[in-house]
Image (cartoon, rainbow, N blue to C red):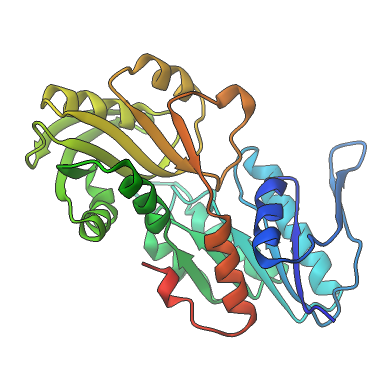
Length: 312
């Protein structure tokens, strides 16, 4: 009897189905609905006693609903005597508040880590955390994947010459350096000052980008202000073309409008860690699938094999 089970809530069922297609198994049945007043109601419709269960649920918009669905499903699985429960969170929400950088602010990344552990999760599988040190907030094993291989495969197919990987801020330097090393490209850094949580002002560009094909790399795009500012800086520096490779397409608020208005951005390449809604689709937005990456990680975890080769 198949001991591997994959379930999902309402956050991103299409990704869960694609993962199951890679694993060549059926998506297990679970009912996740609402009571009349809005409370989440969940029931696992299959026998999961003694099974190795993976719950695929990015905590994207609406983050509160999707997070609560995940916690409640984990609790249901724990009470149904699953042997191991792994929370597969392609996009880990509430990660941007990962430290006390001001007085009287929370550390929500640690809070969510505590909630997942208390609910009954035995392991977490995630991808491109906003900050790598968030792994340390967990008292359970965390497997942290990177989408760099998916993006590199796409960029190689474009056959672009004179590539330069651009970090839009100091926090993304490590990611940009990893891309540059993998593809043999140059590295550039935009040094900027943040005026408010949603508004930034670019200050300096470090590195040679004139006449080159630039690729801005980052972990997420929310309102798009940082990306557009970076595009404007690179355009003034006379880049030949400008693309962005960003793992998580949150695309909130005026993001799509900003992408539409920014004609200097040739492509915005994101992954399907977050579902792209129809009203957000745009001819210059390319979505790459991470189903195989997550599926292979799930297969290796289930068979107790090393997944370090997927970290590159």
